[in-house]
Image 1 (cartoon, rainbow, N blue to C red):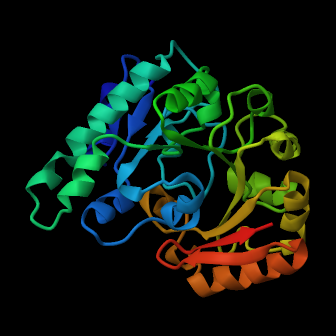
Image 2: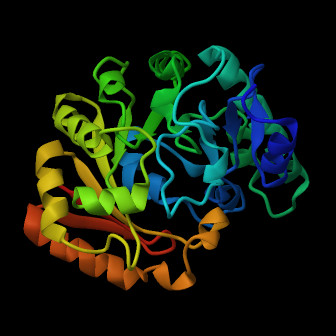
Image 3: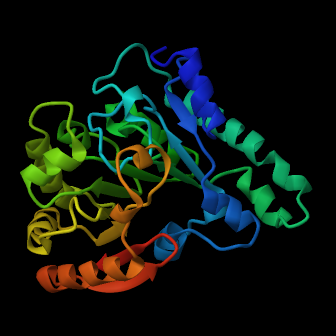
Length: 308
């Protein structure tokens, strides 16, 4: 076990539930899952991609198989990056065990909604069996040695899988079972900005990211570039981002504003958070550079959807 009992207790106090024998996986209920059960709206993933995948916010399992492992310590990350290791340590659990534990933990976390008079009980019942596995909660999932098998296990269970990666392991992306949707995070238009924002913990980070972007056109699944934008850090040079978009040729690009939450508040100020209007303005500049069209938006999440 890489995390100590005290570290696990702190994570669970903040809403995580650590699962599996070796304690490297976790689940957390997304606030949009809660809101959907209360009929208070849905997340931008449902808004943007329901027509493609049929996904619904109340049936989303937000999880990670690599809670303590990441090779970035991004300045804007809302997680405690002091608890991360850039390389895998110790044994790992099998995908079926991880998913069984994650679904069971999610059911317990949602159990209180059954007695909530404001809950939609039909949605609550459906939420007991998630149909979307968002492999994105914390850590870098491609460090998990069995990530391809985890995606295959999701598929075997009839679950749509969204894989969100920082692109540091192109050798893994080149071999894994394809998810239903692949996200690569691109948070810098050039190497200098990348080093300052992502604080890579392994050599050749910028080169590795670009190798992953070059692989992206070979995927047959839905492909998305995620741009997390922070005032004073990386909100610059749309032409530089456009060159990376051209390299990756994704189906969609999501310029998204940084949110001043969690541990990021120890590193950044509230002034680093952009308004939705500023995100829209940057997306318009990026559209002119890339030829992609702005096709949707979600103001509560400060995110724009662009389609090629």
